[in-house]
Length: 105
Image (cartoon, rainbow, N blue to C red; front, top):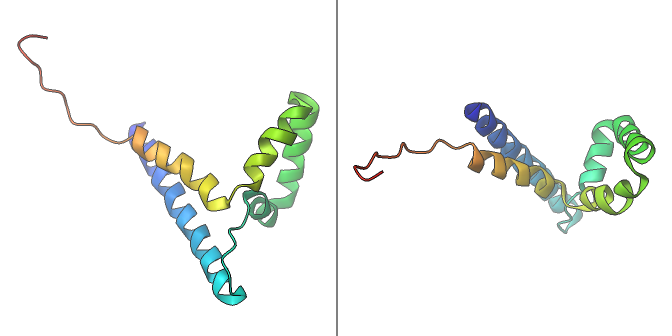
């Protein structure tokens, strides 16, 4: 299980770097760096799932969860939203050295 978590963490980190690289390439074309918001990236990938997620959250979970909570995440830079869970998974699932057994434990 740790190996799967570590691999998923590194996949997310690499994906975040790819998104950051895409934003950097856009900066070369436009003359200034602007990080793409996560909501815009999600909309570009699959607009229908974003709309469906909003409907499900507002209708079946709680309407106020969408507006201050999830929209805040959607407005953050996409590479940050993708990299944070990746770094957490990679750190939490890393292999740890075996502890030495002491005579006093």
